[in-house]
Amino acid sequence: MVASATSDNREALRPVGRVFTFLHREDVTGYLMMLPILLLVMGLLAYPFLLAVSWSFTDKLIGAEGRFIGWRNFLELPRSSIFRQTVQNAVIYSVAAVALKTLLGVALALALNQITWLRNFLRGILLLPWVIPTALSSLVWLWMYNDLFGVLNYILRVTGISQEGYLWLASPNLALFSVIVVNVWRGTPFFGIAVLGGLQTIPEELYEAAAIDGAGVWRRFLHVTLPHLQSVLAVVTLFSTIWTFFDFEIVYIITRGGPMNSTHLFATLAYQTGLIAGKLGEAVAISLYLFPILVVMIYFQLLYLRRMEV
Amino acid sequence: MGWLVGRGGWSRQTYTVVAYLVLIPFLLFNLFPFVWIAITSVKPNQDLYNTAQSPFTLSRITLEHYQFLFTKIAFPVWLRNSLVVSLAATGISLVVGILTGYSLARLRFRGSTWMATGIFVTYLVPPALMFIPLAHVVRALGLGNSPLALIVTYPTFLVPFCSWMLMGYFKTIPKEIEECAMMDGCGRIQTLIRIVLPVSVPGLLSAGIFAFTLSWNEFLYALVFIQSEARKTVPVGVVGQMVLGDVFFWGPLMAAALLGSLPVVLVYMFFQRYFVAGLTAGAVKG
Image 1 (cartoon, rainbow over the protein chains, first blue to last red):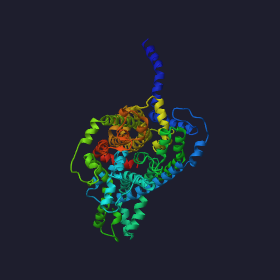
Image 2 (tube, one colour):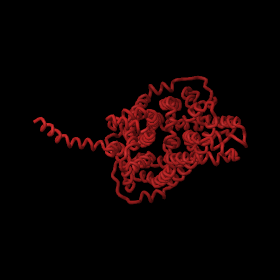
Image 3 (tube, rainbow over the protein chains, first blue to last red):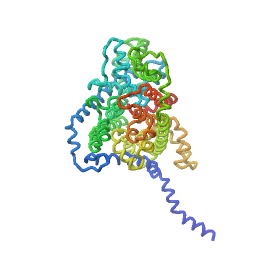
Image 4 (tube, each protein chain N blue to C red):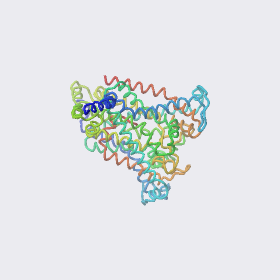
């Protein structure tokens, strides 16, 4: 009687036990642990992205259903002068800013790597522009660029460089320059710290060997330092190019894309077209125009990283 | 340092002096805006808009701009909102990041390398590409104009880098200590909680501090998803509510910039080591 009862219990427990062992399989545990991120990526990245793609073929306005209009958004954008201006701005903005950040960042890293006294302290405070909210630091720059009460024009006046000062944000070329400066100000510390990390992994022996071989300072920099920084620089510049290309806050706060659209970037133009003018279909087409470029950049980055690993 | 030593060129001391000289313009450029925030925030209005006097002179000091923030506008509410949103988004992202990072670092299952690559790619998707359709999704979920919209969407850019960073960290932990625990009858999750996480505190701190800073500094989603003044976060509140048309109240604005940056600066100062470690482990923005 007792024996049959336990065997009954075993019968009853078997499916539960099977579920239990199934849940303990390594791959099942793996998939279960991946579930939250998969939900997040599907629901809040993949789905909105597909939504944007479908909207880009319509004339959808805020609060209204759109009609399917095929490729018209994509075909008409290159005919709009604001869009062409934005493409030009974005290319100048990101190429100039990333080039300056790379050069200044390498210089900063080399200088920090050379010193010992105060090194950690200086590294700490020099990184501050990158730590604080860009929206708030952009306000400070807006205040410093002020033509009447701004400190930059005051400095120009007292040093005798320019008596009347500059209208930093009023002329198209100067305004683009001014927002690039802010981007470089924010991003250079990041480049500097990343490159410093790269510099510290270079073994000292390599330099000694090169010095024994008679390589001078410049050739040691060129043939030992730079090749070792290659991977760090590749990763950092690619990341930075993507982020700079899609920058929003600096332009939104300092110039709103003006004067005469001379500082509009893709994100600010999409914001203005979609959320101010309400033309959602056209706005997502503006964002999506860049998608192929983004894909190519990510592809090269992955290719490069994979080659580094092998 | 070594590339400067040896024959040809100057002595090591000379190079060190040059290095300090090179750092001077960097210090001026990087830190001047901070000096300017501080000076402006304590200067009375009569002096701020007085062109007859040098803007560097600080003859009188006032706290009226700070008082304005706490008595006339919703600044304290924005501070609280920012804190709630950042802490919640960071917490969620860490939990999801731990699960993802651990399973990619340790468990063998089909498609895991493919998923790791996928996560790296999502990490590069800029918010500027997503904000318009995401606003629609957020509204469809009934989260429009609510801080929950931010708590739910910030993990889209926080989780990928938390996972990536933690995956790297978990890989450095020797497998043996886990195997011992499992031999003693611990399950996977128990091993993760009792054995792996306690030795991963530095990695968790790096990821957490980064996530908190990125959430605190986020602007675009907060600008698009939140409309009510009382629900805004600090950056959007300051930019949206303190600028009236073309009129800028520079004193209160700079006081707000200072106080709004203070939390991340403090976090950064206390945990600088982890911050720099995280920065070199995975580039985030720049």
